[in-house]
Image (cartoon, rainbow, N blue to C red):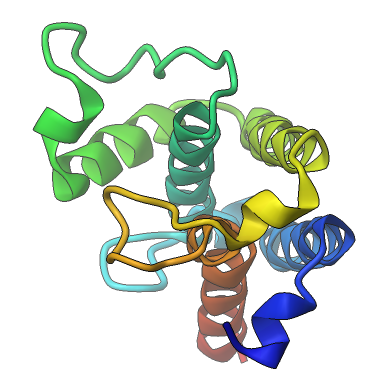
Length: 165
């Protein structure tokens, strides 16, 4: 265990969730509806990026034991792990393209809050436990959370900031 991981606390994770969630939504919100829906990063618009994040933080929350049902746009005859990452992203982005942008912001906030609540209810030492599948062996829980939420959001916020300069 490294010195850095020994200092990981629930408050650190919660602060990162708040900070990076506000940053990402602030970038998208700051673009206005027209620019937020324009293709900017490959085939994706900023709102598509935000929708993609909604799905993956919801998936993380479900994996962490939150009573959050799978989204209605995922086929019921397949489990999420059978659908595949690219198809999950495609289905999610497609779903949110027809939803009001403000609703997307609400869904992002909701799923982020669910993750934050799960973290708040954890024992501090559980952040250092191995996350298990689908993460690489030895990946601590805090790193798995970071990878699906605040670390992921930071990468996307930076990507959007560069693309809109």
